[in-house]
Length: 319
Image (cartoon, rainbow, N blue to C red; front, top):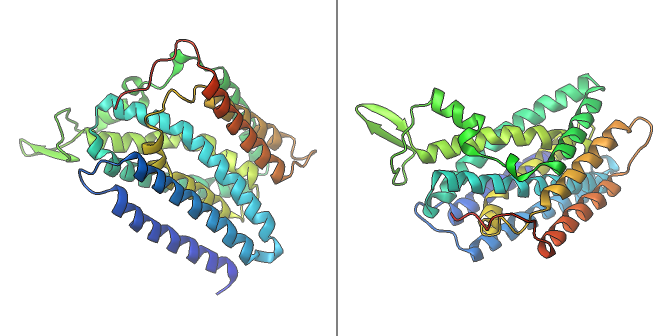
């Protein structure tokens, strides 16, 4: 077995074992996840992700272990920072549907598993496009610059509203749904017909909304790892970040209004990596510079949010 196949095997095994461990902690029916458990779980996923980075460095595939590890770490931190912003959308969705706290774990698990499937599809498609058409990277770059600028200037009136979202309209049109209390069930049978409950609707919405998130995150990760043959680095950085979403949700759900300027930090990162992709033909920006920019922008936006409160921002959304 060659080194690349071995790394794939290790990565797959780690994910399976970690999910089994994760299921035992967070997915028990009617279990309420405490802040302490969420902290332990978040630390577990972060350490696991960094451990895989160390493994890439140790294996040193084709003598590029240091470069691969740095690319993976940069891509992971980028996806992780984008995930933090996504969590606040998840919080709004749970509040809108009035999901009970003891159902959070199972609903998030199914929604995130759907997100992983979509990410795998998008990464495979993106890798194929990049391999066939070099110019697609410039399209990705322009899209990220546009998205970053739009995110930076986005006002409060443009915040996510589940009632008007396309995913909600899609579900109401194509799914037989009910607003009855689900009592922990995803499907309720009435009059010999199956109806999807609010829990199912949240799962579907989380999966569908992640398609929109992937439109930003997939091009972004290609800015860090432009070589389509490095699918393992792209898959692993993306999947580790997504798998950590659930525990991060429980950790941050009580602090939705504490990071008012996080989206501005993410916006600057998106603009930077978009410009990096646009000038790549003339100017080579090392991966370590991208890593420093990501760390600085996200850290600075979080610190700034702690000491500055945006006017007119409501208190944390009660769940």
